[in-house]
Length: 175
Ligand SMILES: Cc1cc2nc3c(=O)[nH]c(=O)nc-3n(C[C@H](O)[C@H](O)[C@H](O)COP(=O)(O)O)c2cc1C
Image (cartoon, rainbow, N blue to C red; front, side, top):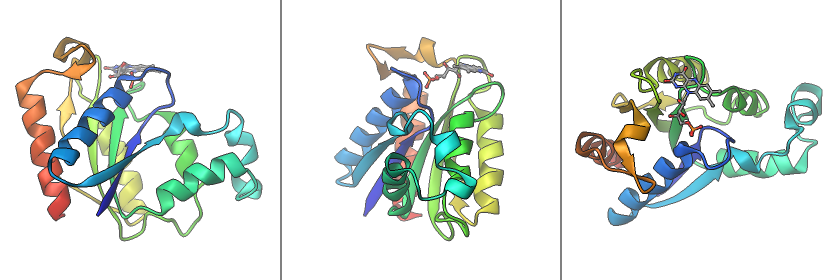
């Protein structure tokens, strides 16, 4: 089994990427292989050169698209941006081949935020999108609120949060 861990933003030095790396370590300890997918690998102009009538024409977009499409199980690390999930992720999904490459696949979501929400609404919005596309979403969706206060040296330190990620990883493997 190979789980694709998608960093839900292209922001440089994102907290999402740090959490994604930590999640990869959790999976490693369980002997489960995983691969990180970085939306920051998308070309700057992809919104204008890879969507709609340009589907399939942007090689740099296609590379990330192929990396995502080839998976069957995913973890999405979703930072809360303006009360939802990042627009870059929606734009990336809007460029994917339709009927969509997520159909009948499975994923888990992790929400993170600076505020008290923990990406709860962001994950709700994304769950609606994935259900529309026919992807199953694991019910346990950890909400990592006040994220900066719960990290130290780029690592999550809150025991409750760490326990939730461990529990989710175990459920995802069996999902
Ligand atoms: C464009 C933008 C919008 C944001 N909107 C919210 C928000 O609505 N609620 C919130 O709690 N935090 C908000 N934040 C803070 C992020 O949720 C927080 O930095 C996140 O946990 C880590 O995001 P990162 O992966 O980009 O580092 C926002 C950050 C950015 C860059």
